[in-house]
Structures are given as structure tokens and as C-alpha cells.
Image (tube, rainbow, N blue to C red; front, side, top):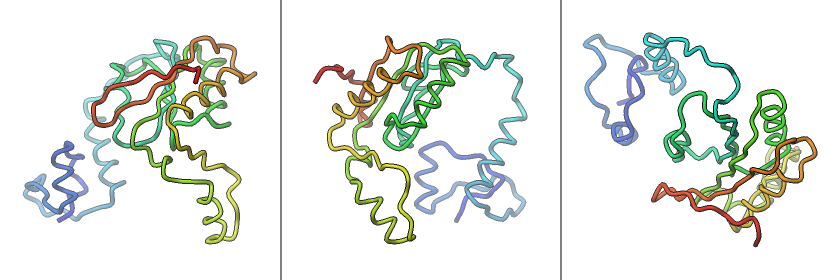
Length: 199
């Protein structure tokens, strides 16, 4: 049975049970109709907002760092890096690769909001390890239009982290390119492994 729309998002263990169709007791005795995932998120926000107070923070990250990472749902960046609200900019995409749009975000982050350091994080078991640029051709065959973007698939995690570091370090738009470091996050141990920029 689906989780009622008014019930806050359950913790991870309960979410696994919910995916298997074993939801816990109802949130209230009143019968409630199930909703979409987005409905659940909106309801969770209502609960969050009841205790929310304006932290009075500036938009500039306290630690002056921008973290670029994969969008993979298994990576909790703030927890993994010991970060608090307001510490950093987090910029995520498929693969955590440095694309033109990542450079756009980093440029705004540095030039308008004062960040100086860049941390790049790929991870084990990434979906882009199993994709190729054929993905674009398959999309073109399906929808009749070729995507303007590259898949940015890769076969070697370390090499792709190095490529991402190089793209940041050679961008003319970024004024701060000295403190750029790259890592691979192990999704089974939670540990970061730093990548030497030299092959």
C-alpha cells in the first residue's frame, strides 16, 4: 500500500519496506488518499517549515568551497564531508563531470559569491561507466532529434576525474584554479580516495 501523501518521508529502512509494499501504520486514524512522490515531498516540506527559522546566513559559502559531484542518490555530500548548511556550494550532474554548465556555475560561484576552492567527486558504481555516446544516437532514433549535449560517459574513473580537474584548471573564466582536487567516493565504504592529477 502506498505511503499516504500527508506522511513525512520515512527513514531509509522504512523506505526500503515501502518500496516492497510494506508501509508502516498510517500517519493518523483518518483515512488518507495516496499521492505522488512530489505530493509527499511537499507535505514533508510543510512539516519541515513548522520548525524552520531563518538562519540569517549570507549567500556566500562560509568555507569558500564549491563541490562538484555526481547526482547519484547514494551520496549524501553534506554527511560524507562533514558539511553544515551554508558551508559550501554543491553542484551536481550525471557523473559529476565538468561540463560547460558546471563551468558556468563555478564561475558564478567564484566571481559573484566568493568561493576559491573546488572539490570534484566521482564515485564507484557510476551509471556513466556503462553508457557510451551511442545513447545520443538511440535518443535521436527514438525522438527524431539529436541531443546537443554529450553523454560524457567514461570507462576509467581516475582518468575522468583527472580530465575534470584539467577542465577546471584551464578554464579562463575561473579566477581561482590553484586549489582544485579530485576524488573517487566508494559507495560501499563511504571513503574518499584522492586522485593524483598526473596519470
